[in-house]
Image 1: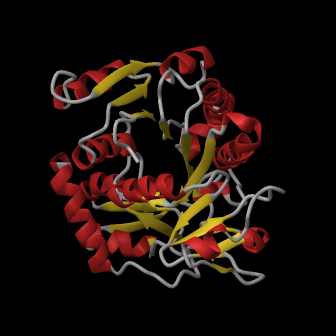
Image 2 (image 1 turned 45 degrees about the horizontal axis):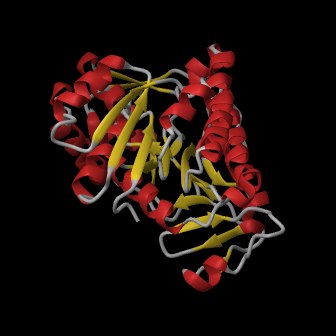
Length: 336
């Protein structure tokens, strides 16, 4: 799919973006160009030390998804776009709601318009479990973004640009996530936990990257792809990282859920189950709902089905979490 093609990653210097860039350059040696689009010049400089332009088919593009004109310049001759740029910290979005809307909602709209104008072949956008029945602004903006990208397929018309979404849960070791937070706090001997009953979905950065690339290959346009991933209990994370530390219950933060949800019951009637994922199909007149039933061996989800972190049939044990923590420390020795 990528042979001789031009690929662009928004938010390319973030936690996900860096692993995506590394994976593409390692796995696909016949790409024509890989464009890193982000607004942080320092992070681009640091990435360019690892992937210099004279050795890799990489280009660095300073810009913000809030500016449609800049996106139009960046998207020239681009074949595939992976949209990872977002404001994603729940408390920060609650406190800065206008900024969250500008980046996550208006940014999505700008990407759709610029991609259609430049006749990009495919765009796949990253979403979150918090977009399903959202209770915080971050989740609400990502739900709106998901709807925009789905509708983008109707907007593109005969130009043919395809848009799809990938939705998954908490990424192990991403900035602001629980593992690096607990690793810092264990030195103090006390781990603050919002609620001891809390559960979350879990996915590694590499698994997320692989899933996005595979979904980009499989997409027809309009789907929301949801991987089958394990859940964990927050207390098990605490036991894996600092079993000797005291637990301090601090209460659920504004905009936070006790359990996460990736597929609500109301979307079950549009959802197909495949071996390694679920596919939420768009409710378009022109959409052939047999696509994944025939091509990928999918089956319809039953009425009343929902995909929740607390009723999941896959769980990480304390030992599983310890291995994830060890892998994270190897990649980030400053947390040792």
